[in-house]
Length: 388
Figure (cartoon, rainbow, N blue to C red):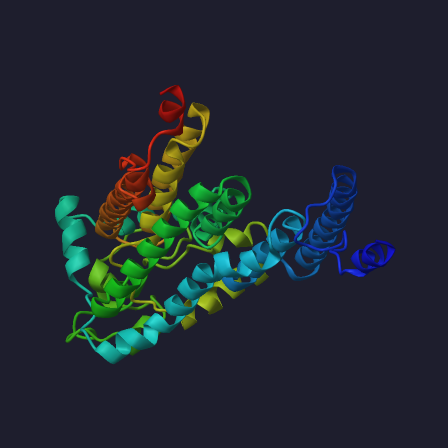
């Protein structure tokens, strides 16, 4: 008996440190407290680095840099809560969207579809009884130097490059199901728009104002006139002549989406944005992805925020539309098509989600396990047998 007991004692046993075994409550509490301290230190260090870099190098107007900021912040905030590799996996679709957006310019050239230059001008003139809204707005509102309210113009325009990732980051931390739904809509909207830009390139108003009909005959993608100055273009190019109402303002339509940053003395930010715009697809105007994405965010958040925030969402959509038209980034027709485009994509995704949920419910109801549970058993019921 003693030998048997000795042999039993020498048998290999699992140690308490085996990760498959649950820790006792006290040990788990100590572990969670340590992870909380580590997480707070990591988040504090991340915030300090972001603040220091912003103070020395300026705001992160570059989308790739912004995505890096958000991803590293989520990794720090995930310590003790989520697997850190989950951040990389979950945010990979955003990086893919940015990559495809940057290479879409080359893809559009490869397809070789003629660029639309004049139809959008004609549509806007038809909608507004012979007036091009961009021309009218810059005639009456544009000043020689950017006024204070153009800060909001530049801010709203730049929100396209920032807000979707901020919303996704908040949803990722708060509600994973909402985050998944948002990502599905963002990715579907982005890729569908990029596909259209490749097969149907279209020039924006600021480019049309620099070119004459003869210079864009045949639908070139990047004619030389597009990169020249607006001054001296006969009769305002494709948009028509412009009479300024503000003294000193340039008497031609020009791209002023980032001009408001000069009021805040953010010249580096303005130059960074302008240089970045040159490297991307500049004939990707129909439909307006700026307008479509603003509409998508507003509709998605509409039922997820309190009523007091809904006017802000509606104002954001309208302010984005005004910004795009006034700054010569898009025609009104581009924006209307962008809103309709967002509606179609969101409706399609919603229908797919409903179909998927219904299919999952049917699969649960008709599962083999449930069928086996409902089948009558040939074995005698022990309770009945005992009663008999």
